[in-house]
Length: 329
Image 1 (cartoon, rainbow, N blue to C red):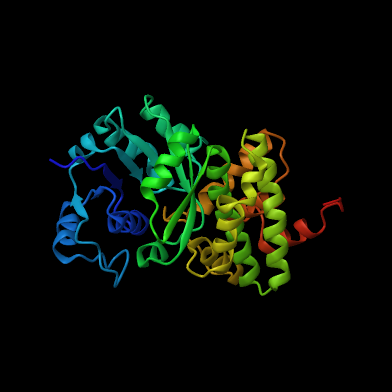
Image 2: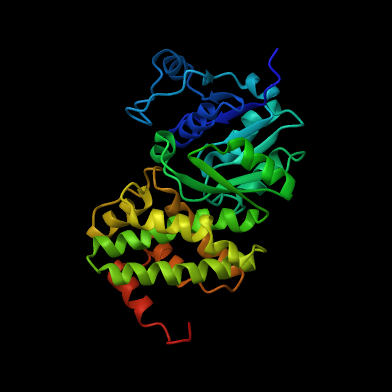
């Protein structure tokens, strides 16, 4: 009988499948990818590829697949790789199967728009006997699955747990750094999506790279203020889960948030009622509301939220940002 640790990744989308791939390839643990679609999971087991999520990438022979939540009962580590707005429902569905000893890690980047809570808070309400860890930082699913060098952050409530999880999930191509700042790691991952939309608008309007650089720098400033107001460490914003993730998401066309912003900048019609908006579109309005309640100035986030909510057109938003009172940096 195997005594190796058991890791279950919930969510068979691109990011969940990529995490399952890189962890299984390293061979430190028995790894299972858990998805809702029984037919899909059976196909993955037979074909060894997930063309809908990671086209052309072979999945490891050692990776197991399941649609049955019972597999969670023996898991030592559970990675929640479902979208941020699905975390509450996923916790209710899968939480009863978690072992009391299991370490739970949220791998999504966002703020719950219904409750305005961080995802650790959402999960800890649903599974109150677990301290939730956070995986965040710059990492596209395709890069991770291909074995391209990637570094991210693993934040937990104590350093021993953070270091243990970082060791268990790291590989020769996937390096995790331990952190104790769950708030900063989560807010960096959530707010960079909003700032990436702003950078996309800049690109779509043809405003130049100087404008993008200004947005990144000033975006980091407002991100730091917000992290501090929420009880996190401002210095976390200068690391992988803040600056690192923002640079990746605000400059690469692999980023859905950047592409969404480019579409806005082009003036493309966006169906705001479709329910398929990118994470940054959900986060912008929630973050702006939270910042207002905390009296934290977040002009870029406010502008993105106003554009997405239809309260401001893009030329007016740009003018509003450029005519703010002159201050010291």
